[in-house]
Length: 113
Length: 112
Image (cartoon, rainbow over all chains, first blue to last red; front, side):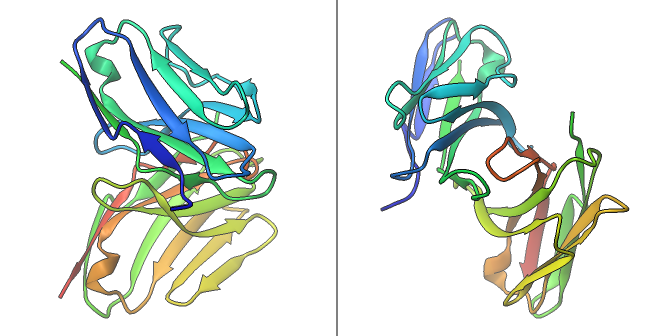
């Protein structure tokens, strides 16, 4: 399909482990966003890229969270030394650019034991 | 920062009736207001959006209205069908390519 693809769909990790979540945006979309969605809540903004530049990381909850998009296409969200409160669905969205809507992937459900 | 409040949190309607979901926002600089539908285990799906230079927008059974003065916007679904059952989120931002601030969601159930 031509939508935003996220992998893995489910990830279980033990507290203290590092995890990496991948996002493949829609081809040609220059803007890419990461959101965190807790159970029963709306998504909350984490960080935003335009091409390979990370223009806004104000939503990252701590320095354990790190995102990159080195070639302006695929992005990886990394969480180091995971904690139980990191359990959530991590959503990626992409947009063609200015004044274009954001389209979401189906997310990665992260469970920290 | 922006704050978006959404109500009701749950809404049940009979098939064929209309459903209305309301949101208010706090930042007068916000100018883009999308609505997303989220089904269980799926990501949010954009169903309609409106920009601040427009007061109303319609797409078949779905319409959105915006009152900039009062800083609120609403989603209207007419002739509801069971497949409309899902969680609906409103959001606001200062442009569609900027971070979205979401409401807390409305669980809509359409009873056959």
